[in-house]
Length: 551
Image (cartoon, rainbow, N blue to C red; front, side, top):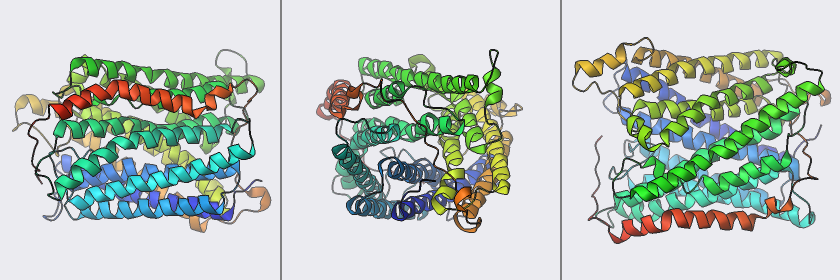
């Protein structure tokens, strides 16, 4: 059984530990939120709802996902390209240290009540300057990580000239390129707008510019979460079910398309904001719909893999291949359920990106429900499914039958909890219930109160779903601790493998791995979509806004 080097395993395990510490705190904050909205919990004077909401968003959507993603990428790159050299490993640890320093600084500011500006930290809400310093350090740390992994890839390419890299490595580099380019927006607004403004070096901030730069980053951030899940679907799932990658070319092309079309689309989050002409909003809406193409390519590839593998195993009839899939293997079932949840999640995304429909759902709980049924289920559940085998692989411990049974319980309860909570949020959003607020009955207006009287459209259903999710999260934390420290050590024959499927490289065009082409096209699209509107925001800038603290 192929094992990655001890140093690389330690690096990956450390990232996983930090990820699940953030997950534990973040899910507890989520549990408190649903009870506060249900008027079943009153917070002490030193703690308020917006502190909890900020911590929930930052710790789960940013900290948990990023640390887990880098743990997965580190493991896969070491497995597919060979052990890291001393420089790559040293820079990876440096990236971890800087990222963690930023995480701790930002978290301390949130807990201290000096940064209740929510996950999006919209101006003119103003946090402590040190919170923004923490965010900057976090991003810089991830860049150090990224360039370390890219350096490992470059070294492999020099040693294997004219060869295509393994599919996992190609997808890793695609993800990191997307991340580095996307972070340029948030780094620009944090360094040149938020930090000088928060420390009092300037009196005002250009609100529209700050939000536009944030969403330049904020939407591709979704694909930074999603692409590692796609990597698992493309590379891990076929191996688990006993098949091969359906099409290496299709897989690589889909990731290239994500680089091109996931970044110049931020204005579709700002369709209700003034200061941006309808032409630029329309252009970025069109580019948003282009992202649907690689998602549909991925769906086609996945079900093509399922059917082809099932047919090779003797399946007959239209859906006979379904019964040949390894449903008793939690490594597969967890990822399949995650894929299934992405169907309604993706459909909701199409609604959010539509001009007229966005007007209906923009500032409502619908968006919260959409966020949970996309990031909270397909992405998070894929990471959970990876956790069940990745930690035993890294620690050399057994994936015991009792752990596998618990893992099934955890995945089923997470699915039920998310279905209840997100369905309630979607319906309440359609009725008009607002987001970003602890509770809004509009001064007990009868029409508003009617929203919360349905079987699903009420805060009780949301609280039940949130409670089930928290219990599921605790089961997951137990599984993590067991596989990290207490599960029995595996013998050579019992070791968990890194399930990485083979792919046929013979038909794959080499230009798909010519990064300068795709990076150049990506920057051309970004320049076309953003140069003129951002220049107008700067040239016709209003007086700006001073900071507000509403908590």
